[in-house]
Length: 180
Image (cartoon, rainbow, N blue to C red):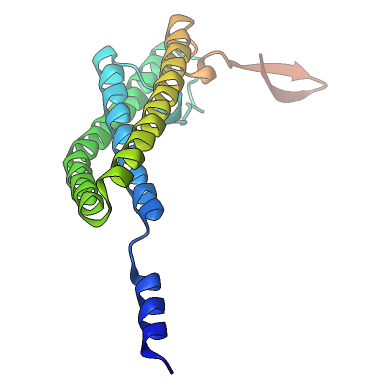
């Protein structure tokens, strides 16, 4: 067996793949962008004392749901729970962002050291274009959801159970629960 054949195969399989390296870098940078935007978005919600739909506690009162004072206190409790969970998430995002940034920097250095400058330059240009598009899409989606959620607060439909008042009606001798 010719040793040059085995050497070339070995190098082929163990050599860094430029495209794969850039994909890994893009995944890291997308994660950073997503976490950063999520942190900023949550901060805005917390500042306004509002809870996005996806983070609202889905518990609703089953007893005393006809009592306004009870429903108001219930809503305050579930809002506090949601806001506490949002703050916890924000704390962890703040801890994760520097780690992702460090990992990204190391990955960029590794790419710069492993591949020729024209290849790196071309790859970085494409990467920046992809990341700019990704950021724009995420920002747009978050803005849309923020406006939707603001509409919930304006229309007082944050917790839909508030509109579903139970009525007890009599019908053919039996009690029935009906919803509006």
